[in-house]
Image 1 (cartoon, helix red, strand yellow):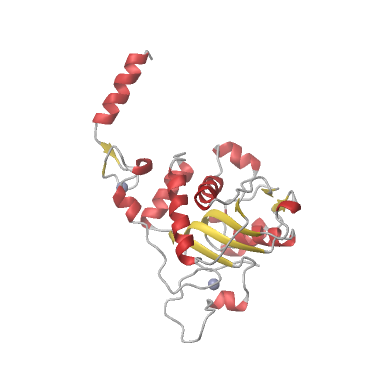
Image 2 (image 1 turned 30 degrees about the vertical axis):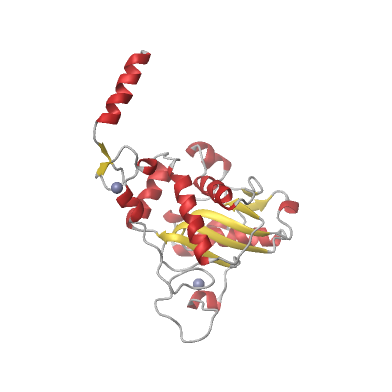
Length: 251
Ligand SMILES: [Zn+2]
Ligand SMILES: [Zn+2]
């Protein structure tokens, strides 16, 4: 198309009313990452009190002194030290994440990452880390999708916190079925032995912040954390954009 027609069509696109892909409402020209402010502010935080370990809401304030853990963490604590999420995986946040992951709107990631850091500062104010590590995709899936959503979030978290981003250190060595498509009982088996640490020297003795997009049963996060700890990491905390409120299934 000639250059002037290109300019004309982009000019017209700016003048025509646009639609927010999440709520189908009017979209102002300056909406962050092409999503309206109503949808961004519709992200629902998880309500305190939260389990000190996995971050699942406890429902009511426990009478006993801290640490407060949910029943599954009390019986069988996960390998990660604690997990926190920006919000629950419903309404606005679920639709925003679908736009980010499945329509290639990668510009959404850095905004979510910045919000995740605010959540981290509020909920783990005293913690310090040596590096940020994304939950990896298998190379074939990454090639198919063109990007790893967790890596975009982790990069944004690293930039906002000033921590180094540790890429290609934790790798997924075999393709796994999408966790969402599996019954809870099979999710642990699906990710067992799926991850490997390539350079143990990069994680040995370090406290790491593992970043993912959604925490569902925690099986993937537990498999990654377990592998990092077996490779010598001192501790692993988990930060995700969203979490579902369902049964936990870690080893
Ligand atoms: Zn909207
Ligand atoms: Zn818990």
